Length: 151
Length: 151
DNA sequence: GATGAACCTTGCCATGGTGGTAAGGTCAAG
DNA sequence: CTTGACCTTACCACCATGGCAAGGTTCATC
Image (cartoon, rainbow over all chains, first blue to last red; front, side, top):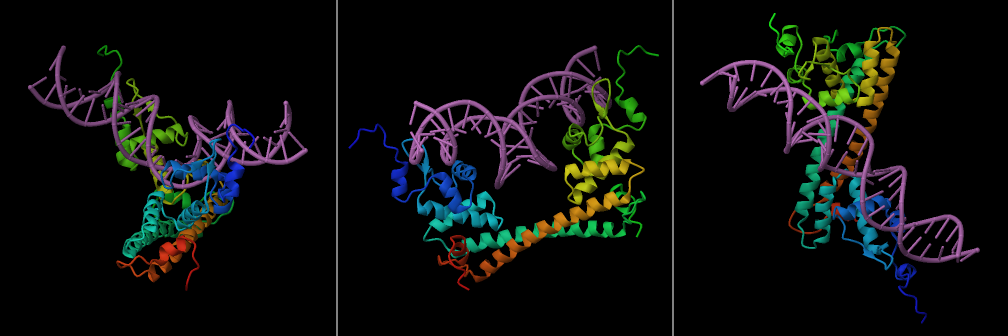
C-alpha cells in the first residue's frame, strides 16, 4: 500500500456510489449553489466530506434533493418544504397533516391568482380603450393619473 | 421683520401648500420610507428641503406619488413605472408606446397566472386523492418523492 | 425659555430565492 | 509538474418593503 498522506477519497467515494456536489446538482436539477444554501438553511443534513473537504452525496440525498425540487415546482416556500420533509421522513405521520398543508397552499395560490387576475382585468380594460397610435391621449395614463374612468 | 436666523420654513411651507413627507405619505398612500426610496431610485425628482433639511412636497408631487401607487397596484415594476412616468410627463408621447408597455405587462401577468394555475391544479389533484386521516399513506408525499402518479 | 412629544434625518440590516464573482484549495490526466 | 475542471468559502446583487437606531427639528405646552 503506497503511503499517500490522505487518500483522495473522492474517487473512492465515487466507487461506493457517492456523488460530488456537481454530480448531485446534475442528477437532481438543483444548482450546487442552492444545494449549499439548503444545507445552510438546515433543510437537508450537513453533507459528509472527503479529506479534501469536498461534499459527498448518496443516492438517498439525491432523492431528497429531487423531492425539494418538485415541492418548489408546486410553489411551496422553503419553510413549508422543511415541514414536508419532516413529514416525509416521519413514518408515523398522519396524512391529514400533509393534506392540511397542501390545502392551505392551494388557498394561498388562489389568493395570488385572484390578485394577478384583477390586475390583468383592470389593465386589459384600460389597454382596450387606448388607441395605441401616434396621438398622446391615453386612457391608461389618465387612469394612473387618477382621472375618472371616462367610460 | 424679526431677525430669526433661519426661519423654520416648515409652517411657512405649509402655508404655501407644501406638505411634509408624513403628510405626503398620508395623502398618497405611500409610506415615507418608500417615498425616500423612490427618490433614491430617481423615480421622482429630489424633493425640496426646508432650512432644517426636511423634505417638502407640492400638490403636484402628491399627484405623482398617487400615480406610482396606482401603477404598483397594477403590478408594474419600478423600472416600468419609471418609463410610464416619463411618458406621462411627455406631452408629445405616442399612446402607442404606453399601450405596448401595458400589453406586454398583461402578457407577463398571464404567464404568472398560468404558472400559478398549473401549480394549483397539480396540487389540488394530489390533495383530492389524499385521505387526510390519521394514516401515513399520502399521495402528495408520494408524488413529491417521485413515485409514479398511481392514477 | 425649557421640556417633551411628534416628527424628521440618515444609515444599516432583514426578508426569499436565486445568481454572480473572487480568491483560493483539490484532484485527475497528461 | 502543469493544466484545467471542479470544489471551497465569503461576499454582493436583485426587488420592494419593513424595521430599528441614533440623532436633529419643530411645535405646543408649561
